[in-house]
Image (cartoon, rainbow, N blue to C red):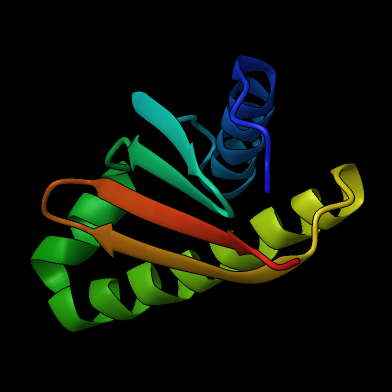
Length: 112
């Protein structure tokens, strides 16, 4: 079971924000980390990029596909960071992103 400490939450927030900066050039506007036994939940509000807004108006289906691919890439990069910077066994990373509200919820499930 993972310790529910402010230091771990701060480390996770930094990792999550670093991935955001790598992929989008900016961090999040709201970030909350909670830990419940072996599940870490990260709630984030992302900033809307001008390119994203342009795609939304001109090619909504393409924007949806880009959002999906970026979410998959986000999970991959976050998993890499967790693997490189912790000794945790990551069972799975689940992420849902809502383009309308710019909110994302990421669940990291740790194995034993």
